[in-house]
Length: 286
Image 1: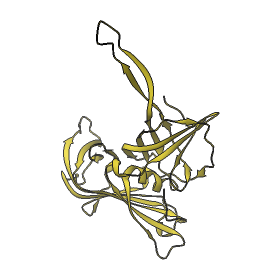
Image 2 (image 1 turned 45 degrees about the vertical axis):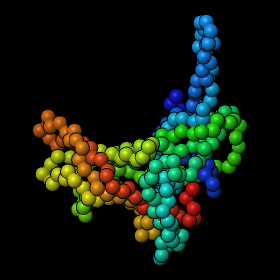
Image 3 (image 1 turned 180 degrees about the horizontal axis):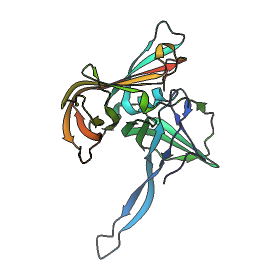
Image 4 (image 1 turned 90 degrees about the vertical axis):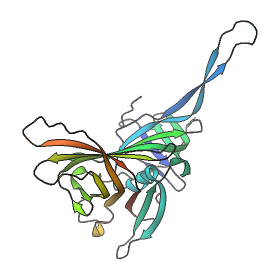
């Protein structure tokens, strides 16, 4: 079930607020399980199965905006390490996030507003997520979601508008071991958080005369910015993700053209993943 965002609003409910998010599609629905009824011991019989609700399942695909970046990255990463007030600014906080297994994180709720069918999905968690960065496109985040409680209907409540300006791939800077690489065309982060954390990176770089990306990376830092002068010291319109100890798994490049080739490299992250994201107005992001 792919639901386009034109006639449906999706909101995330946490301990402090309800926030609507922009999205391109979502598949949030009731998870169905089978209750089996076995035949009797004596004689032959038939096995019956009854449909039952076992919670929530599906995914959300949403662009990352200045208003939703702190909340969405918090849900994806899993743990808020700390929040610090940024000095010499009016009202800005820096939040440090760490990637941990989903079992250790706080649950949240999802609310679908679709005409008369307002559905409430409690006790949701993110089991895996994917972030995609491409030039000439907005940054997108996909959250794979499961929930342990059944959905309810006719939920009403005020929604806090937090859409705002969207981050774009043209304003992203890549630093590998302290050196900036300007030949990176795109990037995909894929993380699964079931029975531990497995994180893979797909780096798409343009093959030209510049230095190629090394097979072993001690530190990779990706910084996304909103290039506007109205954000003080460019803090509020910024988030940064840092990866430690990445090593090359495979080179998926196929050179069959005389011009510049965009070649993907697949890395496995063997170290930590941390994020710095800025918000305005409150220390709480969820």
